[in-house]
Length: 564
Image (cartoon, rainbow, N blue to C red; front, side):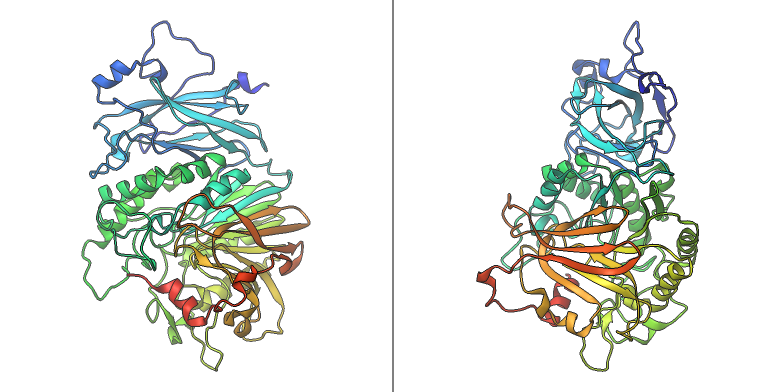
């Protein structure tokens, strides 16, 4: 049956499920704006308060499966409105969506109508099914004469098929004030099949609070985010960036948050600084979660309910890969000895968890049922041990898995017990590129390697950064399972094939000025059934940098942990 004749699809509007389907090619004797938003005139829309182009925040797709994906947009005439409403009137607007089989948007294969409701910030989430597996589609939205940019999405291979090689990129940590989002632009130009965002999509600070040496190059609007209006405004400021819009339009995304989407280093119901009373923290958490859902291409299973939101989930890319997307913030125990690097007895307490018991059971069950070539954990904070002390004391980051050693050991043992073929952990958070072998016992450097970790640097957090010889970093000498370090901005681009996973660590030398080019700093390979990372390429260090001061352990810790 051709796609043009199929009627098997479903859509969802926000919360109320208010979505009407329009079969492709259907005609109307008299245009009805509720059924055909594209037919409404600019004059009619203006009479209801919509007077300018509302598609200022771009488009996005996400959470693909073998039959479809989620489509997203949010209507905002004035993105930076302080009330967080984007200059939109307090009334719903029908929005037409269309999916095309070609990049020129000439062959419509699916179309329908959903509702952008004021209760949900005039955001739109459409879940589309019934499409062909393992192929590209394009999409856009319409309201009257206003037409959104065109986005590209892709369906996953059939569950019994490996498909071709998967081009997957992952990113994290985009502080708007610290630099331009050049890495997002360069990533869009790579045209990957899938993009993972592993947290710190936006930052909560008000202007002149989180500063880089020499001063920030851009500034946040509004106060520190605490209310729904604040979070909506901050998301809009980020979404209005053209480089971020380009990355969203380039490919479907899988998103998970870390801390700055709410508050630095929060843990479950505990704010960053519990010693300072914050009686509105749970109200703040509810607002942050609601705004996050409104602004991300997530399925209706992630609609927040009060202070809770279901974000951990599993996305299958045929037989090639299963992505276990984790939430290491919402269910964790509070950091044992504060947020920094500590020699902390609580870190090894078997009762403490970074995932919570239910998510841990879900993950271990997923390992036992997986038939994927690659099992990939998309998550936030450093998984491997990183001791920053060469002496007998073990001084590690209490905000990372090092602060929850029993959690890490149970999950590592879990993939060994399940005989997971190729476990790979993807990480963000630390504003630097790293590559690591994973161990069951990090105190025995001669013990077997049981997995691989790839860590993406920041998009912009920390400013330009500086290149150095990774072999001279003291963490690599103290922790022999750590294999690579680079303190520049960028992303990681992988090619996942049946026989190997190849990871290119991409960097841009400058983000404090726009338009820098990108290059590959290093390439690592993980071979099928051979756990651990193998370096296959290292770009020579710029001769001008050879005499530069090498990164110290103290500076590495400061760059990761220094916050207002």
